[in-house]
Amino acid sequence: MAKLKLSKQSLHHQQEQLKLYKRLLPSLDLKRRQLTMESQKAQEEHAAAVAQIDALETRIGEELPMLADEGLHLHDLVVVKGYKLGEQNIVGVRLPVLESLDCQVADYSPLATPAWFDMLVQRLKDAKTCRLRAEIAARRLDILRLQLRRVTQRVNLFDKILIPTAHRNIQRIRIYLGETERAAVVTSKLAKSKQLQQRNVLAEAPE
Image (cartoon, rainbow, N blue to C red; front, side, top):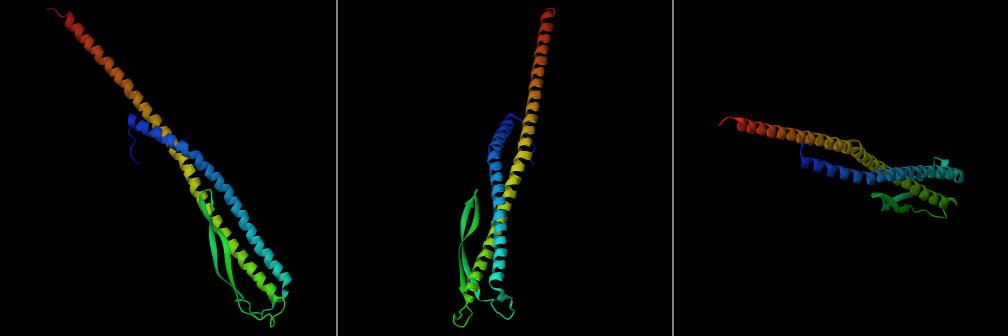
C-alpha cells in the first residue's frame, strides 16, 4: 500500500475518493438486496422443480405400476437429443432459461405394444423436461449466489474498509496540515519578534 502523502493535494484526492465511495455504496447495497430476494426466489423455484419430479415419479408409479417389472427394457425409449436455452437478465445478471427440449422416441408399433405405452412415452417426456428444468433452476441459483457473494464483498469493502480508511486519512491529513500551519505561524511570529528586537537593539545603540 502506498504511503499516505500529508499534503493539500492528497487531502483533495481523499475527499474525492470518499465522495465516490459514498455515491457508489447505496447502489451496490440496493443490488445486494435485490440479489438476495432473487436468490431466495430461485431457491424456491429449484425446490418446486425438485418437488415436481418427485410428484411426477409418484404419479407414474400409481398410473403405471407395471413398470416395476424388471423384464421391461425402457432405457432408450425416450432420449433427449438436445435443448435450447435462452437468456434472462435479472438485476444485471444473465441467467439461463429453458426455451425448448427435443426428445427422440424409439420406434415402436402401437399394435404390438400395450395400450398404456403412449401414456408411458408422454410421462417419460414429462420426466425428462422436469429433470432438465430442475438442473437449470440449480444453475440459476448457483449463478445468483455467486453474484450475491461478490456484491456483498464489494459492499463490505466500501462500508467497512474504504470509507472508514478515507475518513481516517482525511482526519490525519487535516491534523498534520493544521499543526504545520500553526507551527508556521509560531515560527513567523518568532522571526518577527527577533527582527523587532534586533531593530530595537540597533536603535538603542550609541552612534
